[in-house]
Image (cartoon, rainbow, N blue to C red; front, side):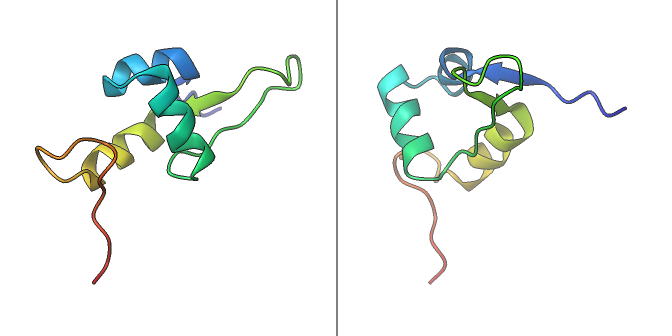
Length: 71
């Protein structure tokens, strides 16, 4: 079984060093995919690999709000 690291929205925000509200905006805008567990559908979970992928798309010095787009 593949054991991938997952975290809650608050933990993900701390990992990216952004506010909880910024994290919610990234999720709402589709920048960060989330999923729920069958036991608690109210809590959103984020894969660490998805956060790492987002970090690689971030333009250095610009912050998470500004990501590279294909030109």
